[in-house]
Length: 113
Image (cartoon, rainbow, N blue to C red):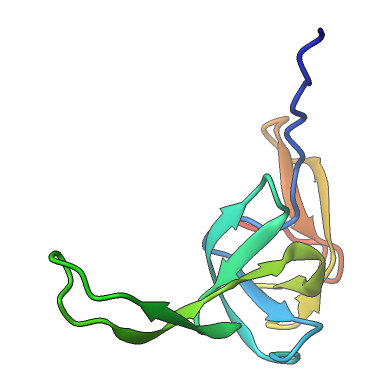
């Protein structure tokens, strides 16, 4: 039996990026990426895709109830906001002056971070 090789994919979005939601209930709204879930190609965006979670009272948390939390959004529904122009842009990769591969904005042709 062969082991299944897990391929780590490069994503166009990273933790801390400012992104625009381009599909779904929060379409047109922006936020900051809090977490990336690479195994599922999903991201959690601050203040977007809010869902209600029912929490059972326990010894550690005696107050139960309904909590509002951010759910994940598929990364295909997110677009990086260009830091220089403030507009959504596609992301590419090219070598910087130090010879390292770095993300850049295809709209303004400037490096991101």
